[in-house]
Image (cartoon, rainbow, N blue to C red; front, side, top):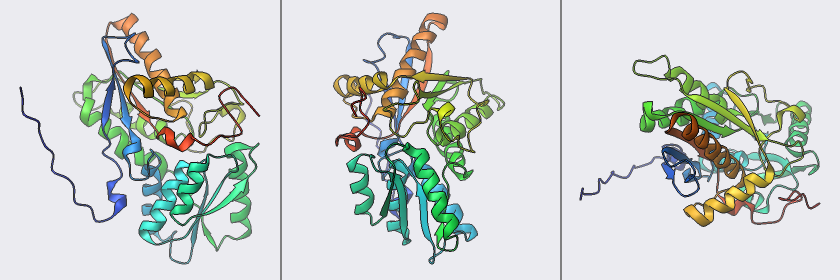
Length: 322
């Protein structure tokens, strides 16, 4: 038996230095219908703020501090469905700036509690308007008080996808390289999908590279219960979103995302949110396609956050209980 290889722990200057370099976990039980296809999930909840949104928040904040847009006399304000808000709040506490967050009133209680624990001030938008309502409200506030706020605008900020181009995508290639067949992830701000997909597409033009199929997931219905995800046809489309970049946009139903989240908890010991459930549901479907058409392959997706951020009841539920 080979001895375990121990990796020396990193010594960090600041908690935000812990963002990135998250592990990849192979799923076997929920992907047993495609036994010859490796299905991996990148565990982004291992970031210090507990979600994939730590990556773009860090990049947007650091870029803004570097060029002077964020200074001691400005309050960072942005619209968020929760996870980016947690990341902003963590950054503010660690680096010493104030944070105001505009989020739908029906965002899970856990996310509200976490952001407030870091010292952020919450401003609630209409629960019926989802993330689009939060975007409209924050734009009104910034327009009224432009000197008061720094508004990173995660939906339009190029630093959002760049965080994934240089981080998520590069890390996936470092581990899986030319084994990777398909990458799939869901659309919210679209930063994870856009940045990671661009990096994987560029890999095809590098020495020893290969073409990787990249798939975007979106809710199948305009009225859905996959918190944080966007049904693009019925939403304010993020400026960073390029619909021509993914090779395919795959719709996933609310119940499929919720059911898969429950399955991976029970069968893999992986306690994830519903957006991750949607990601894994799509990854398994794509693995089944690879099994049928190519007899094998490798699929990777993203575990956006943990399920403990969804314990408190919301106004939108799995079976649309209002």
